Image (tube, rainbow over all chains, first blue to last red; front, side, top):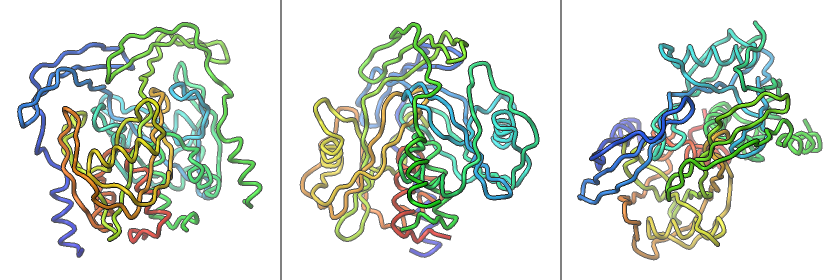
Length: 199
Length: 199
């Protein structure tokens, strides 16, 4: 497939064909950390579904942050959904009025005290394109340095760890980065930056 | 880092340190496609959070299915959460009594009519380790062939497409595989199987 074929293919890859019509819609639940919407929907062929649930969230960000010495700024925290304490990359919510980049820089500084460096968005993904309405913007920040102290939210309990590239690769290879929203950009980063985990 | 250091590191990477205690728990919502639990939790340092919401789901599977000719068996369907119709890999729910492998083989056959071949689980990930309690088991099936016809559920509307490796790589490179639970195993597969998208 040459470049022009590839462009033609990718331009048509995502569309709104076969979009469902929303016949009725109501909010069942609206709390700071959980908004549930119920839609009655109609498919293009006339079939209907009385209860399709969508979880509404603001957009999120996460950051693969790497120091000048090539160390990865990782976090470790307890995750109540799966009941385990895991290594992760920095992640958070985009506040009103922020760009994804603003939010990513703010979250990295608040959660780890690291900042500066060169920033690039490498991926935009959905946690579950069927049931959630938001996207996660994934950044790589290289050449970051310690410029402040950690400032955590009320219920956050995060420790910061500088890991080598080999350690992060070992976590990925062994499925120890549990969260898909973090595993996807990390695999993409290593895949397109000459990972030593190439087989 | 040598192999024994790596093992020691990865064995301690995931734990239950700093686990939260559940003080109270109630189900707010229990429908076939949405179960919401509210926990009142206590952190190890005594801080409490009165409303932490967990979305309970059964475990899921997905499958990177590749024919003997090296074509990828992809699906296209409308996803109401993000309001777009996208290319995806086959995915579904593990039914009671099924192993993840059973479920993956059943879903591929039902949604695409493809089966047989060699199967391997390459990844287990969480859609959101903070708010969801389930895992997705990700398989690669090579050498699959058309052995039946599509049998869809009541509200499914899925078309099947055989794409080349280059086309799937183009989708990934352009962020057109929206769902993280699918992007993560695809990036892992290409990363560890000599992707031509290596730069």
